[in-house]
Length: 505
Ligand code: 6LW
Image 1 (tube, helix red, strand yellow):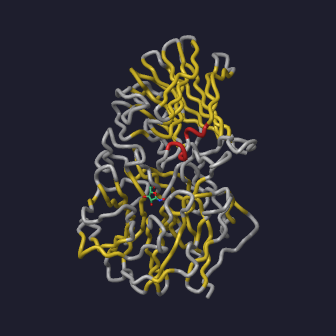
Image 2: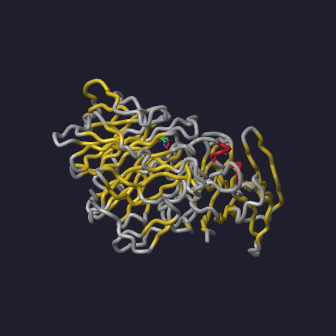
Image 3: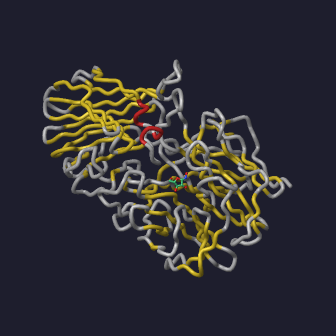
């Protein structure tokens, strides 16, 4: 039985469709509009929401959790804690979002009439004991919450109440680790249970099972895993944590996470887990996933390019664009565009970038090669530009009155790599990332991070070049990716603009 297929026109578009640290994508469609939500971990605001009309061009329309009442991250909560694995659904005229806050509040459910927000305050789910919660409704109006493990419990999504004991549904392939990221769908005569397994590292994969009822018993697909790149030399690795969506023309598509390791052995990925798109066909009642590569066949409908994140932000509007994220919380007391109109002012709240609690505003590195520049006025404090993986892995250029310093923090080691005097007045700080062109040696790193300033006459003065591998997930661990941004480590620092430019070919 062939239900539908994706016509191949020969045209392709670039994958990942949402580059940079955007893992655990969950997708839903409402009419002609598609929406994706991703995990956000220790960053505030949390859960970026993207919109698309064509599945390949995505615009960030907001962050679902943008109020402290929705997202509580203790100041000392660990990096790669916080918000895990959303499920986003459109049901009964509303959008539903369920996530886990592993740094305290557990599973939380939110609703909105517009995915751009505002989203409701959270409904707590104390009876759901597992990460990666999913939501699915049956024809009788029952709401089933399925979670990593893979377990399931019936819930009232309006109150968070659970009914009956949780039941175990399926554990994926015998012996495979970490059956997680379940999504349950009613498609035709079956209920399909899509999961990830093998762990979110190189062995990640996607498997599926089906049943006549949402509660099982589930019969595994004979072709599991239906998608994995484990054991291959494919440039996209760690593929898993997927979600399915059907287009109005009947075609099916999958969003999933994958990484792009660079350099020699073992390969280092620096952008975190990114969101890829792949077409899906159906054969004999099972999904067959198309080839996942750095391009995806253009969908058979007009593409609507939009939503390129503006590179230059001159902080002329009072609200920060949704791409800007901070660490654990953000208040107008430590981050404001109102104090000096047209500038972003950061007031240090005590910590340095080595601490969990620091005044920081950054954006995800979304290109393998890029340049970020910012004009900083440090007459009243110390601060600058950083590229960070977490508190223990970051490269910074920090300016204070009369001097700039480049500092590298790698695990337990922290060192000033370079410094030089600067003239009075605002200074342009620059971080440039260049992906390696060729691997000359198995030990070649993934990229080079060059850090410097611009002289008052605009000429560039490089201070140092550092191996980027130390700001990779393979070195730092965890679930996030690089974020590049501005910080204040003491006093007040004002930024006139910050410019992010892709240097990818
Ligand atoms: C998430 C789990 C996973 O909860 O990583 O790749 C965890 N999959 O499903 C954090 O993103």
